[in-house]
Amino acid sequence: KHSGSIWVQHLSSPATRIMGVCAASCAGTGGGGSAPLVVIAGPPAAGKGTQCDKIKEKFGYVHISTGDILRDNVKKGTELGLKAKGFMDSGGLVPSELIVDLVKDRLMQADIKEKGCLLDGFPRAPDQAQAMVDAGLKVDKFLLIQVPDEMLVERGCGRRLDPETGDIYHLKFKPPPAEIMDRLVHRSDDQEEAIRVRLGNYHSQIDGILPFFKEVVVKIDGSSKPDEVFGLVCNGLEGL
Image (cartoon, rainbow, N blue to C red; front, side, top):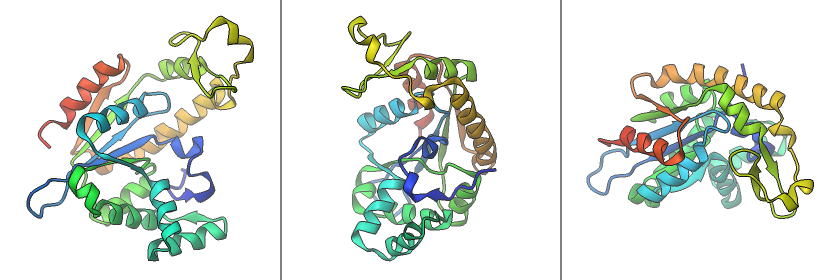
């Protein structure tokens, strides 16, 4: 089992994206009630990032990640940031409980209370889910994007990077111009073996996370076109 604690130096690395999670805190404008909290999860190459962009555009949520929260607190020298910096300076792990405290603090800020929040990358392991429960962070909906592994492998293996522009192409779904084919790079994390390892890690983590949210899980078929998937996502968010 992988710990949910975060290697600080790898906050933006592919490993940090194994869980592939966004959470939306939909803050109400009236009254003193707590804001709804929505989590969206999916395996690598499931299109979660596209869905998060669509959710931001439609619902206007503030988009943040646990990495952003951590770096911002360290930069500002907050009490929580100083605690995290101690782990950063020693090259150690930032405990899940501290990450939850940082998330909880961020969710209380004015912009999120006004607009809601799209929280990217949390929880990404069972101990983080447990820490969320322990901290009283109530999840109202858990949107789970599901795509068959073989389709995910096809999506991932076909990716090619243009090192000159940074553009990502796909040999089947977004073919590159013929004149740049020779310079395209097949990244190591887009090789089949690496993808299957990430999928194995994802399944082991999500299987341990879902029991914490079983009352609010909404399963989304992510094998269709992005707009069709987004229709299912919107249906899942109805009533919040």
